[in-house]
Picture 1 (tube, rainbow, N blue to C red):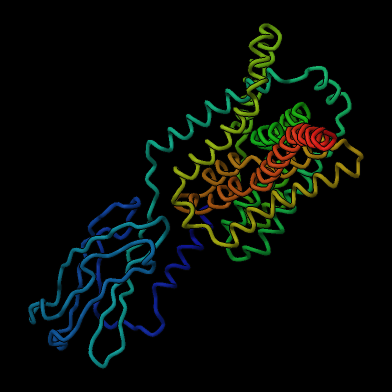
Picture 2 (cartoon, rainbow, N blue to C red):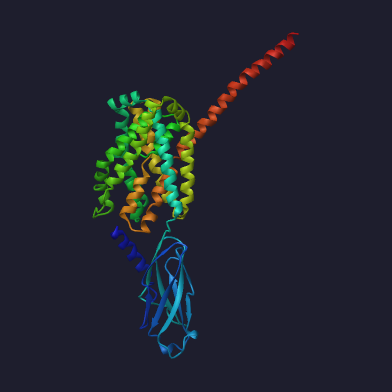
Length: 446
C-alpha cells in the first residue's frame, strides 16, 4: 500500500534528522537521490558538497552515515578537510554501497568540527534494498507443484466416493469447519495482530490475511498421516476454497478496513479459482484411475502415506533452502503469532466437533481443517497489495506460519509411531517369554 510506504518513508526521514544537529550554509547533492539495489549488490553514489566555508581552515570532516547499518554498508565514508584544497568551496566524492539485507534506509552527511556541534545536511539518499529472485525460487515452485499434483492424484485414487456422497448429503463436519474457518479464525487473527503488532501495520495485515484464507492442501496430507477422515478432509478443503470467493471479501472489507482505513484492497479472485481447480483436476484424475484401473489405484493407495511424508519433508527442506533470508526477519512476536493462530485453531475445531458429537476420526480431521490456512493465498495477496521490499518483509508472517503450523501434528505422528512400535515389540516379546517360562517349568519338573 502506498499509504504504508509513505508512513515508513516519513519515519525514516524523521530518523535521519538528529535533533542535536543543525546545518549552516553548506549543502550536499547526491546522484542518484533514489537508489534501488538488490542484496549482495554494490553500487556507487556521487556526492557533491557545496558552500564549504573557507574559515574552517581544513580542520573539519564530513561523515557519510546510513540510518540502518544492518541493511547497507558504506565504503569510503569519511572526507577529511586536509585532503581538500583550502581555497575550494565545492568538493566531489564517490562512495560505494554494499547491500546487506532487504528494507529501506537513508544516507545522510554529517559535518564534524572541533568544539562545535555536529551539523547534518538536510539532503539525503533514499535506498531500497530488494531481494534477488533466482533460479532456486522457480525450481522450488516447480517441485512443489509436481509433488502436489502426484499426491492429489493419489488422494483421488484413495477416495471412497460413497462415503463422500454421504458427507455432502449430511454436511455436519463441513458446517463445523466453515464456522471455525470463516467466523472464528478471521477474528482470532485480527485480535492476535492487534495486541502483538499495534504499530506494525504490515505484520498485522500479513496475519489477518492468513486468518481469512481458505483451507490449505497440506491439511489433506496431515489428515492421511494421522489416520483422519480423508473424504471429509477433501470435502472441507473444497468447500472452504469455494466459500472463499464470498467470505474473503466480506472480512477484508470489514475488519480489513480497520487495518487500512481506506480499504483499498483487491481480492485475487483468479488465484482462488486457480487454486480450487488445481485441487479438483488431479483429484478427478485419481478418481478416474480408481474407476478405470483399480490395480494402479490400489498400488497408489498403498504408498499414499510414504508419499505424503516425503511431500511434507521435501517442502520443509526446500522452504528452508529458498527462504533463508526470511529467518533474519523472524522475531519472537512473529513466531508466537504464527504459532498461536493455527494451534488455537486446532483446539477450537476439536472442541466444536466434540460438542457436536462427531467421531474421533472426524474430530481430528475438523481440528486440522480449522487450524490450517492457505498461506499461499496470503503471500500472493501481500505481494499484490504492498510494494517491495515491504512485501517480502510482511511475508515473514505467512512463511513463519507455514513452518510452525504442522509442528504439533507432526509431533503427534511421531509419538504415535513410537507407541505403535513399542506395542509391536511387546507383542513379539510375549510369546518368546512364554516359551522361556515353559522351558524353565519343564526343567524344574525334571
